[in-house]
Each structure stands twice: as C-alpha cells, then as structure tokens.
Amino acid sequence: MTLAFEYSLKRHQSARNLKIKIDSKGLITVVSPPLIPKFIIDQFVKKHERWVLQHITVQQQKPTFNSSEFVHVFGKKYQKKLEFSLNKKIGIHTWGETIIFNPTTPPRIETKEDQKKWDKKFQEKLEQFLKTTASHYIITRTHKIAEKMGLSFNKITLKKQKTRWGSCSSQRNLNFNWQLVHFETPIIDYVIVHELAHLVHMNHSKKFWDLVEKYDPEYKKHVGWLKRNGLHLG
Image 1 (cartoon, rainbow, N blue to C red):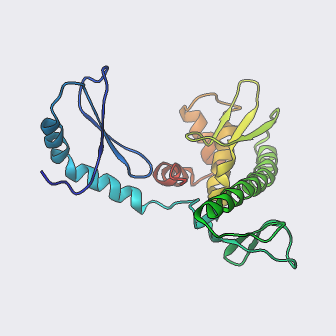
Image 2 (image 1 turned 180 degrees about the horizontal axis):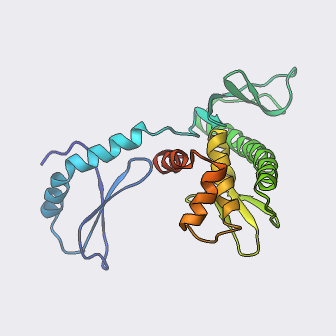
C-alpha cells in the first residue's frame, strides 16, 4: 500500500482506538493499541490520507515567525545574518530588512559543528533581543491602555509560553508571552486589552467582550488571526 507521506507508529497499552497526530513541524504519528496488526493500521491511515494531506497543506501555508533563516519583529520579516564588523555595534541590530548578529570576535566556521555553535549563539542573542524589545513595547503600551480604560494593575511579567498569550490573576498581576513581539502591534494591543478587561470581568461573558470591543473594535478579526496563525512560531 502506497502512501503520499511517511508516519511513525507508537503502540500504547492505554490506547483504545487508532489516532493520527500531526505536530507543528508536519511530523505524522499514529497511536495504536498494542495488538492491532500493521496492515490494519495502514488501511486506517490510507482511509484518512486526504485529511492528513489537507492538514499538512494548511500548516505549510501558515507563516513561520522564527526560522533558521528569518524572523518576524512586529510583523516585519527580517533575514538573519551573522556578520563581524569593527564599525558596527556588537550584538543584535536591524539594518533594512536584515537582522544582524555582530559577535565580539570573528566567527570561524569550518565544520558543521562550528555552524551549529554559531547558530546557537545567534539564537541566544536574538532571543535576548526579542525579549527586551517585547518588554519595552508591552510594558509601555499596557500602562497607556490601562490608563485609557481607567484601570490599575499590580505588576507585569513576561514569559515564553507555548499556548498562552497572556493571563490575569486574581491578585491583579498580568502575564504576557514575550513571543508576541513577532506579531503586528494591533494583535499585541488586542491581547493587552483582553487581559486588562479581565481586571473587571474574570470570565468571558458578554460584558467582558463588550468591554474588549469598546477599546478594540476589531477584536474579532484579531482573535481569528491568532487562532489561525498565532501558535505557528517555528
């Protein structure tokens, strides 16, 4: 039986039915009860082949906000470049449509291991830059929007999270995912308004959404955008 893709098989004692899982990188895994024959599993996957291909196509069409070659900052796409220069500041900086990492010493790249080492250094410096950039924008905007909404909060924390863009605690503390820095500012502002609105309504009632809409009339568009694209960070 020929399939248009490959998949890995995992058998679990607790599994009751066959399931197909596709991760954010498009890797396909079939979870199976321990005693189901391989040919039955192949038939199951073949039956769902169209669904798998459609799912992968949708994933491929989503933008990748931070890849090995590019990174998005406030919605703008920059090409990553490692470039040593005595005439430019050390660290990460943007130049036109390029984001440059200028190290303290000239990079010596002769092997794949050298490349991996410098890629890792670049990513570490870039993450620091992105977190700092996000902090400057989000903290400033949160104070400004809170003042506009007539609200006060305790403190703001920024973290790297996989599935949440923000949260508001009963102690009036706000938490934001600094990876919001990849998105255009109207999307970030929506998340800020959303969490500030929870200071008034700790739920998602009609009154909550009415308050969100008052300060972000296009919130439905922003919610839809986040659902379609927000978790595909690369």
